Amino acid sequence: MQVFKLFYKLLNDNRVAIIAYFLLLMFIMVPVNQTFENELNTEFVVERSSVAVFNHDADNVHSQHLVDYLSKNTDLVAIEENREAIADAFYDGKIQYALTIPEGYGDSLTGNSRHEIPLEKEVLNSEAHEAFVDNLLTVYINNARVNSANLVANPSKEQLNNYFTRLDQSLDTSIEIIQAEVDTELARINAFGGFFTHYASYIFISTFITTFGYAIISMRNAEIVKRDRMGQLTEGNRLFQTILGSLTFAFIYWFLLMLVAYFMYGPATLFTSQGFLLLLSSFLSCFGIQAMAFFIVTISPNKGIINFMATFVGLFLAFASGLFVPREFVSPVMQQVASVGSPIWQVRADEIILTNPSLSNNGLQELLTFFGIQILLIVAYYGLSFMVQSYRRKQNIYLA
Image (cartoon, rainbow, N blue to C red):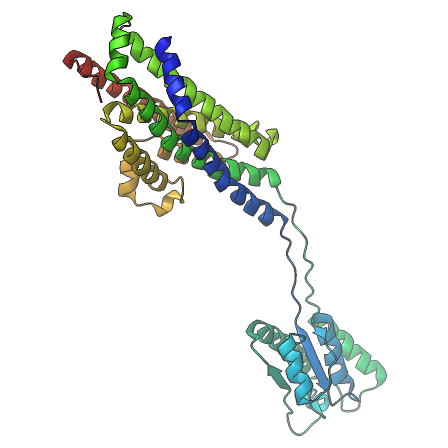
């Protein structure tokens, strides 16, 4: 197994790149996971408007009732009624709305006044709060006028109580806000299947092309080839050990990344039916990428081309397959080109898994189709690699 050992020795010489890509994945996923956690822990908070009310009609029960109504729906702030105090309150953010109830407004509201007296307001750069308080006042005024239609000119205390009871009932639009129970497990499944495994596939592309490329091109060195020939090592055995080295490395690298995912998301995420299917999808994609990387390295003449292909192929497939952006944002033409690699089939499979927790027969059939395509791509890329190797052997071409 001298070629196998040499392959891993050359990989070890390139360990800096391997570790760098691994750390890149961690650098990407830590803020992504933190964002998911923040979204889960964020609670809805009702923001109340702060209102200053200057009631010049305080002796009127209708005007006072309006103030009581506002106190239930806004935060009333007591400030002095002068220009400087009001300006300071707006500037300091203590209030967003100042309302003045003119003298005689209560009688005007119930139709006991000859003239309609309007409310006076003052707002500064608070459009949302202005719209909210304006709506409260409009609702109150409309309901007060409707309910006061049958109110006599000088109502008794009992009549007033009945009037305000009806008015309160018509204004009772209280809404109870209930904090929904957050399904943290579903969020972790989405983070794992929608982000971690997809970014991991990009890391696989760059890592495999770079590391396999440096190792295999180094193994084409004339002296190494000569030594292998003198050791009576057949080309078939040499190729077998090289493929075995790349396969085992791919599996170890995939396993380490999934082990990190295990500690990130927990066994309850990975060992569910969805989690298992996502693991299988990532596993097939990993070896599809490994086969593609092996083929790219096989046809690459030197390390310069390897560097270019690792960057170009990695970024192209990442964007065209939907690893970095939602697939619906990618043009159909780019998706067709990207279909020569396994990542886009992984993404399409993951979409089915994440959107259908309980797979129907049609969903399962479509999922198996995507898995089958990835297996066919693995076979196809290895077949192409064998054809190139066979041609080189017949033409006695081994050097970079």
